[in-house]
Image (cartoon, rainbow, N blue to C red; front, side, top):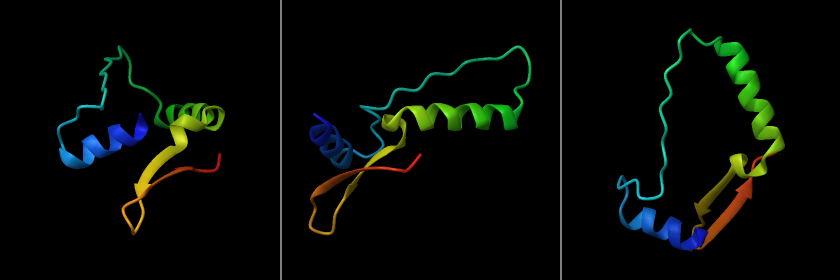
Length: 68
């Protein structure tokens, strides 16, 4: 599944077929330091948020997870 998603993204860059974005409006300004700390905590607990897929030199796809 992930392989086909990556290949579709390579074939049509910028199409955003597998990109989901959500915009939320906040009543008050967020504290950027606290927001960054919260995001880091979430990323530490969920490896999927640190995962990336890259094309190797021979065109093969490699998945890697950044350390927490």
